[in-house]
Image (cartoon, rainbow, N blue to C red; front, side):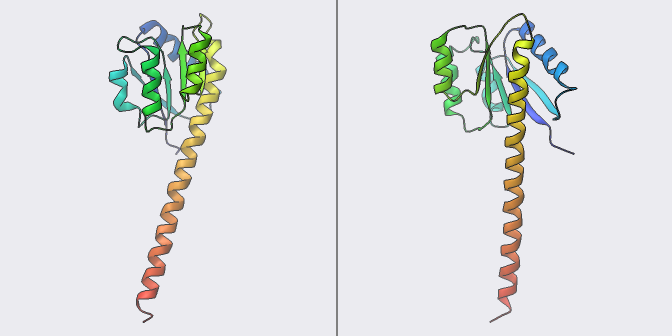
Length: 159
């Protein structure tokens, strides 16, 4: 059984979190990966969860952060998880700064949940690809370590 993707939604508005949850539910039939949705309502609450997240969806207007501060958080995080910004800030400069900060997708909040559907499906695919790559690398490391142990044990009796 495949590991579930850990999706972190950083959103303080309950209504927007409900809309996002509904979009995810609607994607379940189309999405070939399993995921768990976790929610944080502030940057402070999300900070400890970033490293163990496979995909991060973040609003830019949070109670404890300004957009620039939020970008700095993602620039400084050790996680390689894709970040999707889902915000009401329709500002070309913010969009450009998002790209500079390594944000993968910038989606405007609208009343039409379909607006985020394609971006979310792509982000889930990217997160799954990264999860599979990490798993393959771990398997390869384990195989190489086993081979090295076998070579080492074969060489001990040869002298």
